[in-house]
Length: 182
Image (cartoon, rainbow, N blue to C red; front, side):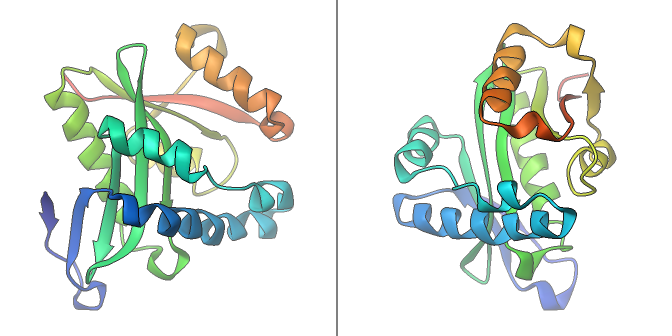
């Protein structure tokens, strides 16, 4: 269990822990609430996209790659990941809008980086929207860099194809990488 002392008193007591089965419907609720911001960008299809199912989330939980951030014991954010091509791939990181701007997502990313490093994984990877302010530009501020499409590893190329098949390539998407081991 990883405890984080709050930066500001209004943040409350913040803690990162492994997700539990009784958290999974909360993760879906967080995903739906966080997705609403896409409506304002003219991306209602993304806002309307259903979150991962409980069964899909259970797979991350069982693999030990689902973490939540709690604020005063309430789940406020989550991150799910999976190994792809020897790296830890962040499948999703979402923060409930009532907790946005408190660096919860960044703290979850740092936790994932520590987990990856501990397990000998040289990098974190993710795929995201290139032009959404809280996507690629945000991840660049977190130390990620865009991977040119012709340099995607086989697993990331397959992930990008799955996203295209799901219709996400209607808006520009990119793969990104951040080293965990120097």
